[in-house]
Image 1 (spheres, rainbow, N blue to C red):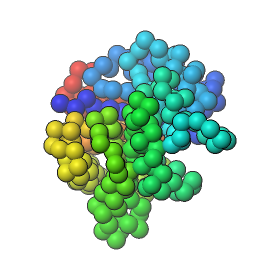
Image 2 (cartoon, protein in one colour; image 1 turned 60 degrees about the horizontal axis):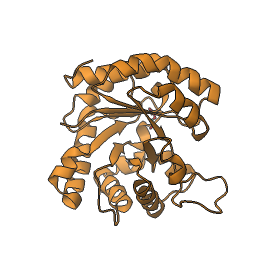
Image 3 (tube, helix red, strand yellow; image 1 turned 90 degrees about the vertical axis):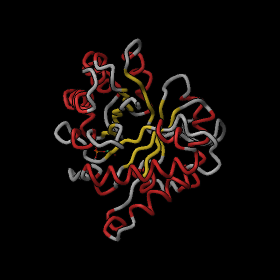
Length: 255
Ligand code: PGA
């Protein structure tokens, strides 16, 4: 059985001091819920501070982005080698990176390769825009993004995928559990076609987009959905803890 996962994407929020305070507030309650994997993804500059607060706990750490080269003249970028040893996960291909920073499938593919090479676990984000959804192109867009990200990648064992419909991100308008379960099932069968059934059965696939403590049960109760990638609600300690707790409850696991 797949261990459910809740990852908090703090985006461009929190100063170092605020990040330290937020994770300090969450740590005790999160640490007690062992049946769900918890990951917080603060901004780069807070990774070290957050790492020292969660040291020795069951809370994991992720970055929100990474560059595809190991080192060199890439002013302002952070390499996978810099992240390895500091955190376990890295979000790649978030729709905000695709939209505001023009990241395309080829770059995302290079980033996934570089992250895997450095021993990191990518949280690869895919998702359709509203007009694509309305045009009935969700399946085509999502499998296209997934295929592009996985070109020449031999091993998908360490991969986590997050299905995040762009129209649901930060809008308060989450998708439905049934819709997301269907698309996530499609993502899993795409992975199965490339890597075989047993790999696909082991890959965690999360739903993201306006997840809250009030709606997480709708997603976590779906058979294909292994948890959530949470933005806004991950910035409130009580909300985030409650999302993790409800995930454990709905999956019938120890809280
Ligand atoms: P949201 O963001 O929960 O604020 O909608 C999710 C995400 O972008 O990962």
